[in-house]
Image (cartoon, rainbow, N blue to C red; front, top):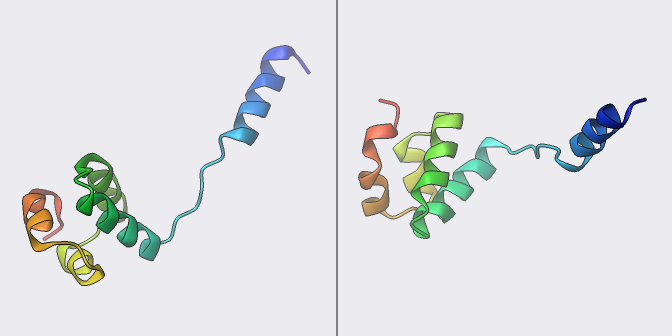
Length: 74
């Protein structure tokens, strides 16, 4: 195997994508919204298609959810 291919394989082993469930994503969104990290919250909301009700029930503040109301599915 050549140098390039072995580097690619080693990088793939070290940079594996972690698996996240929908409930974990909801709790992460709540954490990000409470920390005012809206960009990370936006990424998870759009990736999983989360609704405002799910995030509010998980404990996010109403103001933080309303601030991002344009990205939620209707």
